[in-house]
Amino acid sequence: MKYMLIWRATDEALAKMGDVGFGQMLETVGRYNDELVRAGVLVAAEGLADAAEGVVVDYSSDPPVVTDGPYGETKELFNGFYILNVASKEEAVEWARRAPVTGPGFKTEIRRVTTIDEFPQDNEWIQKERAWREATGQL
Image 1 (cartoon, one colour):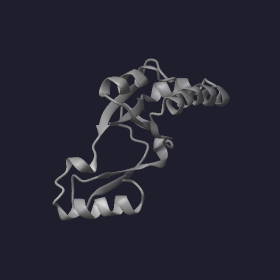
Image 2 (cartoon, helix red, strand yellow):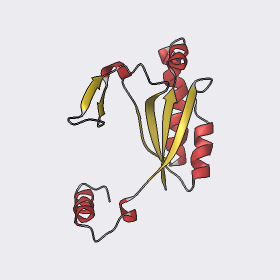
Image 3 (cartoon, one colour):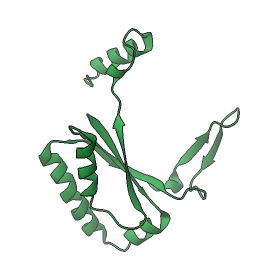
């Protein structure tokens, strides 16, 4: 089963993280990534650019409203993610507990990644997606 570990942090927690040297941060996160690779569970891992570079598309109106970052109302920002292929939610939780960037203001949300097999296979759109995934080597 695949699980996504979503790293979230408050502005204050991110500011404190700035006190850690970049080289030290690369070493710390690199060791964790290496553990995931050696365990054979890492599928993907990416950080995200600063929220000030992003936009939000709000569908509350027609047409949707696009707002540039940063987002003053947000108490926690989604800063990066890992996708792990593990046997259970409990195993995903154990990997999250070992995360290298922790402390007040940091959280990890864990969500199972659904598979195409969980959708009605007789649906034309699911069949088109399955064909695309097969053609691109994703299945």
